[in-house]
Image (cartoon, rainbow, N blue to C red; front, side, top):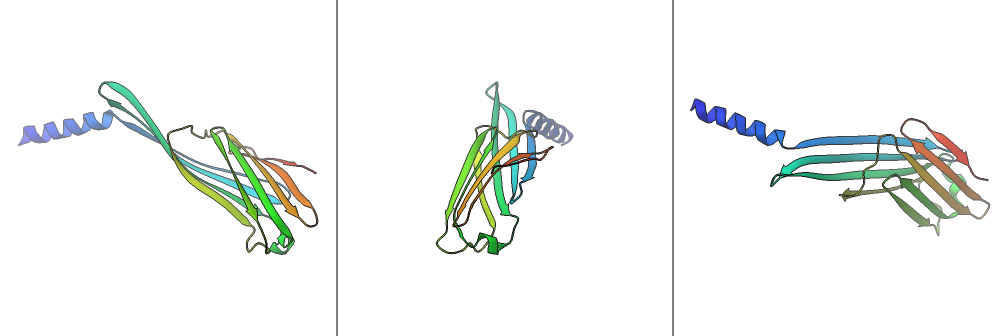
Length: 155
């Protein structure tokens, strides 16, 4: 019985030593005069061994949130909102067309990926926003970083 327990413990140690998992959970945020942006990245990298070969896999979930800083009333004439965000491993975009005033000043996108590139902890995420209203354009570029928040307003 003692030999079986020792063999079982040894087998578990060998199996866990063959794979290693790293979790990469990052929150990026930034803002401009009119907008706040937040990008949440939750990634997992797994290294292992199969048939004597080293293996690697990764997967991640992300959530992008864009929030208008002013009052909802200021967006009442918003006809179209376009946004684009770019990370070191990919990009995404969204377009909202309004026939009625928006019910919220918060716009978001999310998704999951298996394989592909990963977002690095020190990545800079660029966000472009273009809102078309009857009165004006709400154009801005937000540069979002985990460590530094830089803001550029486009006239």
